[in-house]
Amino acid sequence: ITVVYIAADDAYNITIWLNINGEGLEDDQLYDERIPGRYEWITVGRDAHSADSIGASLVSAAFKNKQIEVGNAGFDMVFQEWSLTSIPYLLNKFSGTSTGWPPDYKDDIYRIALKDDWCTTWPVASSNLIAIGGPLANHITEYFNDFTDAFYGLNTTEAPFTPYAPFVGKIIGLSCWNKTTYTASSEVGYAVITTYKDINGTVGFLVWGVNARDTFYASKFFHEEIIYELQSFPLCATSIIVQIDYIDPEHPTFTIPEVLGTISETTVELIKGGIHPDP
Image 1 (cartoon, rainbow, N blue to C red):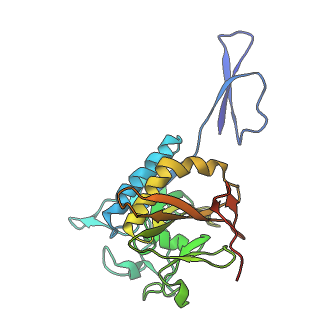
Image 2 (image 1 turned 90 degrees about the horizontal axis):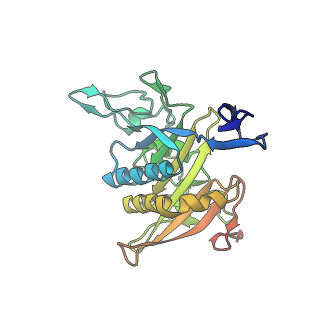
Image 3 (image 1 turned 135 degrees about the horizontal axis):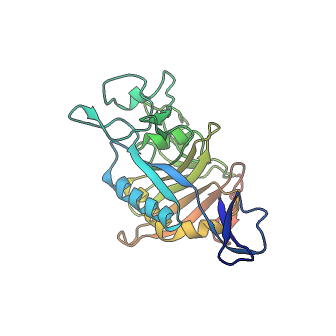
């Protein structure tokens, strides 16, 4: 939304009008200001490592620096104190105890669903939300793992979705031509920054790594650098895979081996991403 301030012949009378998408702006406007949208939610896993929470603080700050607000925060699953549920949670619970374990948030074919809303006033399904932490740590990320162009190979009792052995426990570039996979070691880690809009209108923005430190440093990389560079990426880019080199574990360095879209991959600035021919 763009708010345009127009000065009439009488300089003391200023009118405003609202413009959607910045199209058809007048040439004689006094000045204009753009009002970005917002994310209703930023989430971490209830049972996740605390590294995800400090990563979430950096991602939230990065959006704030771009004047994009975050409205609320919550867990994926129910959290209680004094047998009371006070902190928001976003997943629908199909069965189980008052708080529930991950299987309680899945239907009989292991699918996860978002709640309609929190306290009737904050939409969940159809909202814009940010999820920090991988699909084993944050089940909001697991929900979007079915859709994003970089995903995690899940093959657990609770999520037997990727039984193909070369993919299990790894990041897979779905639209990479040769389906390159990435896994972490003591010297190198990998993370995903990705977005997807569900057909029900829910927008997800996800930052997650193979391990907790990968999630934290991907969040730090997003906050300090890549959020600005993404402004010049092709509009078709929906996911990036980040390589994190821990030769100096307290000062890791970052490269981007994959820039992915819905049907293919691309190269940005000659060094980010690339085309990986099908062998």
